[in-house]
Image 1 (tube, rainbow, N blue to C red):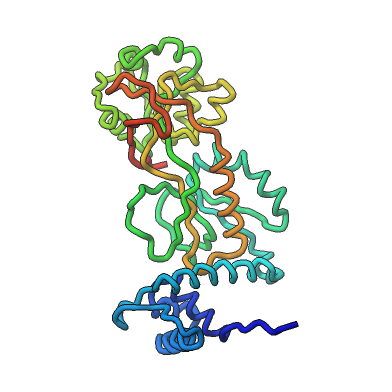
Image 2 (image 1 turned 60 degrees about the horizontal axis):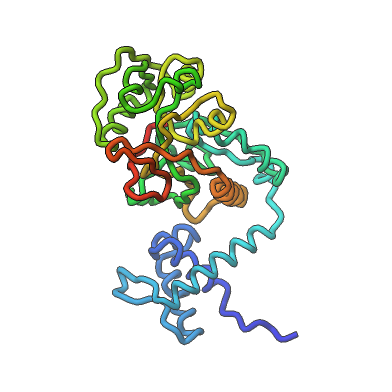
Length: 324
């Protein structure tokens, strides 16, 4: 068998870290070496290959086209190697800690979780409830699920993987839904609110280009899941993301009389940049697959144009991120 003519593995590892992190100092921190050591390894790799992998001033090096192709291939290769290695004892014992929006966990994630457990029985999953900021190291979080708007500032310590589109609209019980034919009839029903996102109705109206008259009855609840249960019980109309009501709509507990419309935000998996555990990567990939398999929401009603619109339709409503 002919030996593989591979470049020095230390040089490949240093270059992969630089390509993934984008800066020599960050790559050096990850590999616990000096900035100069990373720079020397990258130059050694370029000399070995006879190809320029970086360009620009020394303080702002960027990858060439050949460098980008190599860096992406190396990242995939190192991930495959890591997946093939048996897990360390402490990794098996620690399991996977997922920080998740509480209502999303209850309504979307946990009903699907048996599929992941069946595929990866060796990975114990612990879901912790959180809406706000977190720190991967300090909080012991392996993966977080959050809502983010496209174009939001990058997170320096996290890799962001969108896996589920956002859609939103009014939902209520079948009995009350029978009374809703248009916006005017919708406005006459009691309006439900959650304290975690009191501006939801105002944002929906602004995006739709309409102004609803003040509700004759307003009912407020501490959490999204309380509000949705109140809607199912016939106490009024709630405004909800599709992920929270998908199963209730399918079961007929809730009805979206005017449909749901696309929003700008996406549900994303956040993993530690450059140091996601094998379990976190598998869970992230599983989330992407589950998101792709999720049924589309019922098409929505665009009050401003008096037309039905759905995901991908022309001139959809755009709604910003709810605090879930």
